Length: 479
Image (tube, rainbow, N blue to C red; front, side):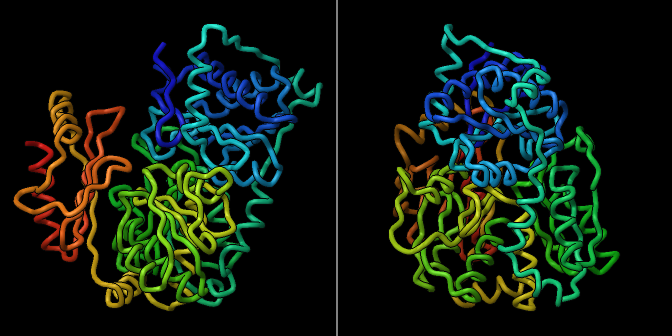
């Protein structure tokens, strides 16, 4: 058996290869041991997304938890990641186990553990759980679910009602209702079915919904709300003359947005638009939290409105850690949390859970359009006229293992002082390598720990410079 290792967001593996019922029970037992040590009255919620066998994996985990005398709330339908997070906090539980591989292809399944804070477990927690998994003394316990119910250790729940009621308090549904806007919604066969569409319908929004049925194969691909995967949504928007298109991934923690003309608005730009919306329209003060490879357009907006910026490693668990604050590695400088996000399509806001919420992100993008009575591109142009133009992109490169090893050695042993003749003014190594140049352009490199893939992050002040920077970055990686 391969070692169970947590990545940026839980443990993920290919179904029937490493992701087996045996390994799920083993990991759940390790989590149960951790919870029993850290909670006087242990209780957990268990749920999963629309992937293959999510229900059965959830039941297997529940058998182990109940055998360890941990009160377990088992979701009676597929449940979004932010809803699991919300219910942990609402019920004051010891934690939650969520079966999801998020936006990964259909072959993958995953287990995400969240402690009592509701956010994804940070490394100081997951490293302990991993060690428990490796211990030869770890003994897996199991209890039949019927016996668990008789012993009042198991309760079937539908957490949707409380979440939907709360989420409506975070969005200006009155302005959305008054706008009479027509939009497209692509649910990508994921857990936002019955959540995002229902909220919009209740708000009186005229919506056209795509992919609102479960498909464990995700049409043979992955439930990622990317530019490529939203081509059908674009077609519908064009045919029906819709003003906005929104989408969420498989577990509804990530988002994708198309503007009125069908343009894909990157998560970097959505985060920037929403920060601008909050500080301009709602007069919020405090701190914005972003991961290291997320756009510095956020910093420009923050500087203009005198808002603090906290920079974290990649992984939303670090943003959630800042929100929780108690024993956080990122104590507040001053003021309150405003918004947190990362370029891969995750965000949360003041007063919400310390976890990504794609449902809320879609609703807030719609709110910004309706309140400001502008397209997203018009709002973005207004921002750049105020704080300066920023163009950004992320590229992925598949390398051989030999190339990966060579690049890793070059970066770790002798980080460049200049790249293609351009002097590096500052190097940030919070997570990967971020090379900042004198003109504030920057180039970021992160090597995947699970596959021979290198991610290249680029940011500069014009489209022409971005193209040149991309060529420079690719040449450096493949050297």
